[in-house]
Amino acid sequence: MNNITRLKPLFHPGRLLVTPEALEKLRANQIPVISVILRHVVGDWGVVSDDDRAQNDLSVTAGLRLLSVYPLPDGARVIVASEWDRSSTTIELIGQMGLAD
Figure 1 (cartoon, rainbow, N blue to C red):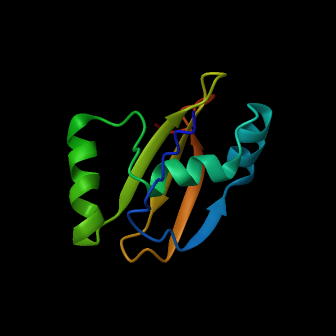
Figure 2: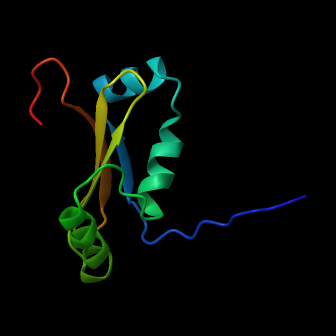
Figure 3: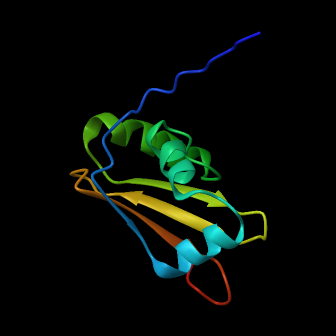
């Protein structure tokens, strides 16, 4: 049985940036960077609040900033942010060892 799910990107992420800390943590958790980006551009916003989820859904069409948060297997979290003009998308590490949430 061949069930193929095609995911349609909601926006172009622009230039892709990953902080060294986020890259190290993704590698340590064996999470490919592309999988995080793909989740973000297809509208899987991760573990954001319902209000933030609704804001992201609106922001896709309104041209506002987009934010996603994804937990990693070791308990760390990464945030993915696409700028309002879609010029860039950045992955950063958050909520680890005193870093700002």
